[in-house]
Length: 475
Image (tube, rainbow, N blue to C red; front, side):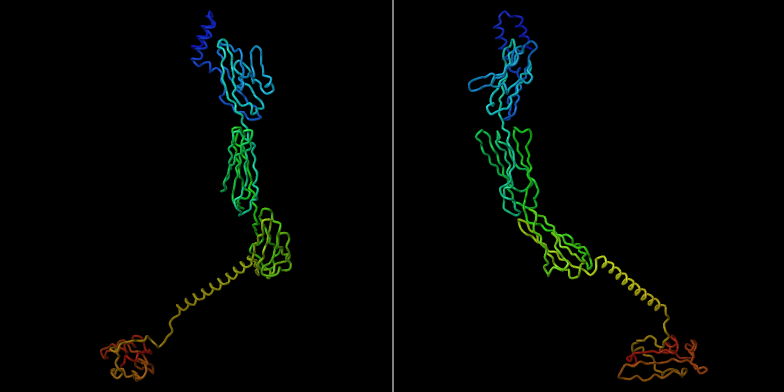
């Protein structure tokens, strides 16, 4: 505001023009407004061989007028004017820059230029200068640096990657002739190591090489490494994938054996599959426990049985596979059964059912016999329980019985040398040539003597009973 009022005052009072310009310049410098009227970036990065844009924005007050804008460059010999824009006279370009330099959209507010096909010699300081009336000249400078975009590529290691070998250089990521030097590294999940080397070139560029070293393993076949390069001249990170190629001997897998080989089975074959790098070129089938059976042929990598299986086809068969790295083999034991697993399962089911039925019938029979035996009445017998009495309970002798029982049989003598069973019969009164049992009243009446132990037993258990006592009871 102060600068505007001062300029308005000096315009209306032009008695001393030189003094007025001096005062305006001093006020512009003191306030710092003059330097802020031209806007340029402090630094610009130009890529070798490409175009670069040098921006220059001009802020002109409505009370001021733009007389001219220009671009100058500082060389060893001094300042050199490259291009001039005048609202009245147009554009002027230095002869040595006519083909490479031009204004983008020249106006009172824009003095931006484009420099094409940048070379190393284009690096340096450039100044955008603006002439305004009545304030005079104002300017701003920018520094141009020339970048060299690296040439990025990946090269394989000099030695082949062999499974189980020593540490080997897998690949090298190269960022060639970069300015400034590029940042190079590998991205991977393998447990290897990286080693970087930098070489300075004659033109001021730098070549960076990063080697990746790793101990080869077949399990990493087909996996990828990624070379990553970062550089100011690149709009985004440069990424190059590299596929690992590990060579290994064949991994063999025998197909076709389902474990149900039986006599009479047809269309049977064993196929020898192999995973290897490089591909396998040698296949061979042999039998280890004897000669190869008749009717069996080797077709490519398969062992084909051209006839139904036989019992003597059982044996140990070996498949051999080889490639440029080495040879591997795999053995397969074949057992030919008399019948298929399905038939064996059916037979076992039938046998199990029959055995279950027999067992169930046996248990039912045993149950019925036990049930019938429990319900059958006990048979009549003359032998009662064996009375095992101590000597103190010895029954009285027959001679001691009262005369009311004259029919009581005499007790036979007991032999001294062995255990003898004593048999006694109890008889009641004889009626009509029959032996009847004694009545309860007769046995227990007052006219009879008390019954002996043996008589009481006879009465309780009925006539025609036999009693057996040990010999020691009658001693």
